[in-house]
Image (tube, rainbow over all chains, first blue to last red; front, top):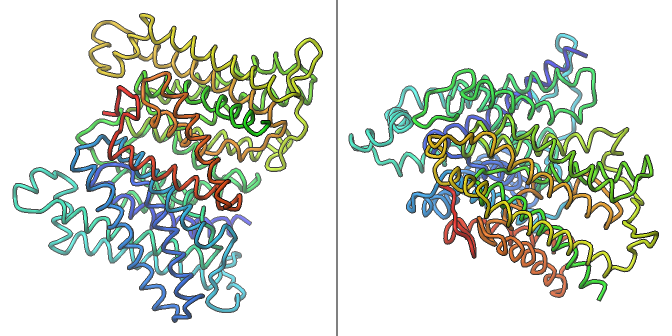
Length: 292
Length: 289
């Protein structure tokens, strides 16, 4: 039992980490809560569903085209909604409320197009899982873990090793100074949205292989991703990964003795505890603006 | 006619919610995104008291509102130390927590199955069964809410609230205990939200947690922003328009689930347009800084 809970927390954690990672990259460049991240996740899954199930493309093609579409969606949202707000120097709360608006709009648009029913994305017959250390792991869960680890590694490589990654880190730390040395902040924002939304799309497709698709599927994972990034320290990239796995662990071990319905409650209690006692999280970076 | 009164009653209940939220976000400038939590407590306390202990809805309403304001204290106390979007996130989190409790505490709330046949209000032994009598009751509560909030806003207390909104550090420098005032605003706002919840429970006579999702909190937030931040008539106008307008969709011949989706889409679009074009709302005086 406990072995299975550990394994489940690893799977959940890797999904949370992917969402939190994308969220953090975007947060660090624009410094507001991009709630629409959750709908990019949902949209990624639905793109894959359309391409794979309706248009009968192969799974790999569907996967790559969908994550590119998810990435494009993120960029479009930024250009149409956030860019004008940035131009007007709107407050963080205006951004937050507008991103809620986009979230509600797109979620219901998806519901209107695909209906409220639950859809499934199945690449083949459901295979029996493998037994490892007394826990059962399915091939799809292995896929989730591998893809997450590869992506996290690639992202780390991109941010640490490439010139563009260096420019991104410069904007993370000091947008004004990096502008002075000739880094165009709009270009970095564009890349952040493209990259972050790509990760959200991947997470959405992976989770829909494991469970189902519903128009409302993005809301709770989004919040979990935000909680994970706050636990790890908002904006910190290793922090997001740490936070994701930590949240997955606490959530899944927390329901060891009680009903699984209480998972969300546990996650939010952790959020409140962190906001109050450790608002910068485990690896939080000092931001110019004080949180409290 | 019944239908018209029904729409008016729902508008009235939402007006109370919007007015009480406006006190918190419009007049004091605290972004509280979990307002449905308070109406949830008001509704469940009053409904459960009536169902399990046979207590009159009138007393239930009062106890429900008091419990809601206690929750306001409980949520407000830790949250108000946070600023801006972090306060928004914390109150949002509390909203999810309360919803999750209502959904999972099955022995008490019956969870998603809901509580059926909640008794209606009655006056001197006459049940408020005819819909227009209930409308008058709701109208009365809207009036009370308006009067109380008007009094608060125009009192010295209200001036302190606005000073917190405009410049908290300055009002602290003038020796005002801003923490105390912010907490008080949460308590008062939660009290009226509790009343609204109880009015809803005894009107619909059925209660399940899906009425109090965080989306509901966002809807009330939209009503406040749309009508105008920091404007009392604005909240009533905002609530009424946003309740009445989607009803027109029914006449377009959309199925009820499609109408609900189109309504939500309009709400979402409105939030974006308001933030882009008029962040203070139709009649508002304040925008988030």
